[in-house]
Length: 251
Image (cartoon, rainbow, N blue to C red; front, side, top):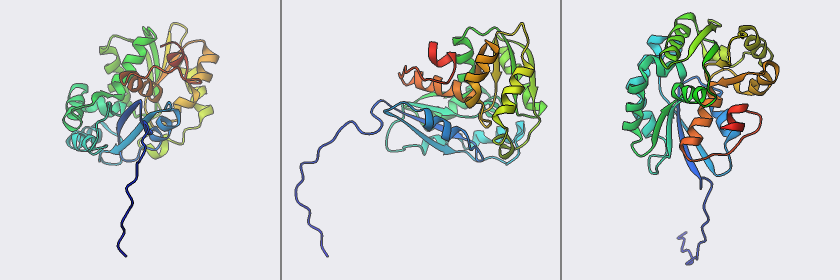
């Protein structure tokens, strides 16, 4: 059969992503970030993802190996179009590779997009809520928790305490119950802290932000909430989103 189409006067509209297109590079076993970014994406904003390869175990050494594939992974997200923002979606991975090097590799892969990282996003979010003295919790082993604590101290925050759960695999981190997360956040809190930070994209921290803020009366910043906020703002999307804490209500 030979198909011969009529001449159609095709009509177009603005399409699905008429406000912005944002790309995220995630690590291989990540199972939380994609769902949370898409769930909370405002109308007209497209979220796109690719994975950079690394060993299964989460350690400084394994995370640092991502640097060799980061540019390629970024380049494969909508390669025939232009993203507005490109983000490396791993806090400890950014710290292991170095923030500047991570951004350089993203720029190589997606030269038309504004580059950022999850760790960078957390810093911007902490600054937005005027955080000075923070307590932090994460699922990492102590090696990575120490790296993260030092990173945030270098960025100018006073880290009163940084507690890790000493988990090695994303497949465990994604199963941490939300009721435990709330208990954990309240347990690490200190009276002199103005902000509670929950660091890492794998646990379901984002689901608990509102509840922890209500129970503690303090700012709560978590990795995925901060990344969503920062990448949207970088793309010129200033929507206020419900249920994600003061960061999205006020900034």
